[in-house]
Image (cartoon, rainbow, N blue to C red; front, side):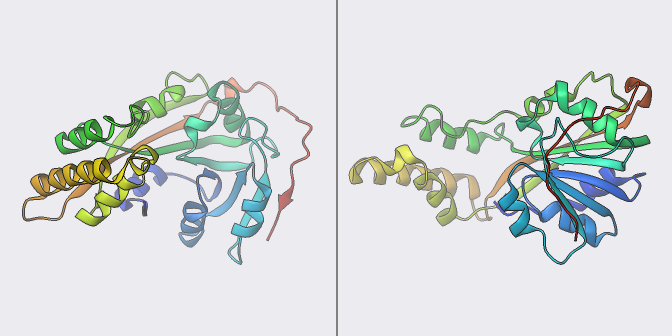
Length: 245
């Protein structure tokens, strides 16, 4: 799904942040966007090939590293921005590392985009697809995805806010989405067509005379580092590869 970071969410998250920023994200779209806004960005990923191919002529620094073993000095950044990858990291070890590399007063920013399955027509579509695959259209809720950051001792003045995002989807697009479910593709022609006809009916009933929009929630969280929670700079041996452009 193509997603452009919502301006209102971006403004809320970045309010009061300094210029140097460490970014952990699912793609280079966010780091590049932050560079265009004037931030000095370094991004990390575990995949060296991804970083080599993605870092371009823009002034983005990069390092191959894990979130719980960052190859940066104590107090290096004004902000750490984690987008869409927080569920993939271990909060118990990553949050102290984020706190360690932040300057006093630095900010941790976290965002995660998830489908809003509380909307009735989405519930009907999910129920239909689950008749052939009980695990289809299941994912952690946005709140579950960020549960690991709650009650952290390393950050204070914590706040969270949800922003709704609507992704336009045509009848053809919805049918293609359902067709792409492996269990649906594995059906014989007659049963697959029957299921796709039902999916089409769900679209048409929900859309009426307007284009249907698939609902998402962008959960945003921010906090200020408590530097006292990091008593001494942690020095780690690391073989991380740093790429400076």
